[in-house]
Image (cartoon, rainbow, N blue to C red):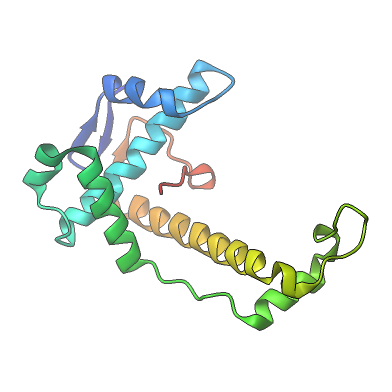
Length: 157
C-alpha cells in the first residue's frame, strides 16, 4: 500500500504503527483511518515546512512531539475563528432548550449553561475550520495510493 503525499512516501510500517490509535470494527477500517490520519499529518507538516514553522531537516531529527507543537503553531496562525458571543449563545440555547434539562425535567437557566454553550460553539467552529483547511491542503497536493475522501477526514489536534 504505497501512499504518496507530494514527494513523501507513507510506508506500510508507519500505517501499521498508527493503527493502534484508531479503533474500528475491522482491520481494513483501522488501516484506512490510520492511513488518512498520516496523510493529514503529512499535509500539515509539509505546509509547516513551506511556511517556515519547521525546517525540513528538523522533521526527521526532532521527532513527532516537536512536529506536533509546530503543527499546532501553524494551525493557530492560519485558522481564525470568531469567539461565540452572547447573541450566538442565547440563540443556540433558545433553539435547543430540550438539551438543557436537569434531572427533575426543568429547563436549566441560560446563565448556568452559557459557558458550556460558548465552549461548544467555539469547538464546533474550530473543527469546521480545521476540516476546511485540510481540504484546501489536500486539494493542492498530489495524493496517491489512498482514496482520500474529504467527507470523512480525521481531525488532528
